[in-house]
Length: 155
Image 1 (spheres, rainbow, N blue to C red):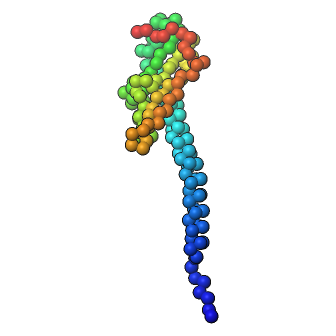
Image 2: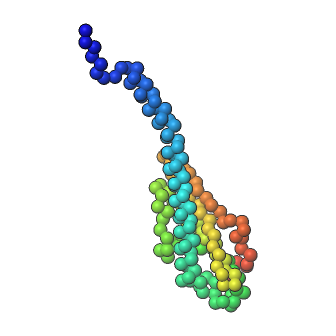
Image 3: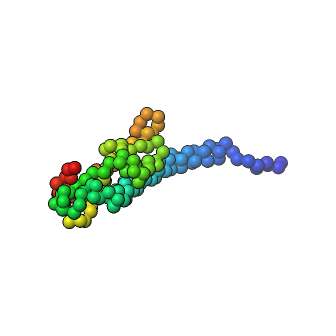
């Protein structure tokens, strides 16, 4: 009698599907975590772009912002440049993350000028819509050591 051994048995098929299911269950959270990490990295890069845009803004408008050297501010002053202003001057575009937007009024760059040396730090507040109605919030505050040691600029 000749035995026909073409194809797979039911047990082999069930074992294969089970193994694929286990691999998928293990891999899905890892891939999801990598994707979320990349999204957070995009927001970090956007925050850095806000600082770079503020440097361009200060380069172009420093006399308007701080006045002439030592005239309005005793050569030491602080100024906040909102994301709205940076976007209005076309120095930066939207965040570029799918289903995400940044609060243009509460995202800003703090600039301090002391002895004609500028230091920058940024606060960013963004939300990304996920799964229909839920939101992921991304927020980075101005770092504590940055706190302005000068008097705020008054126009």
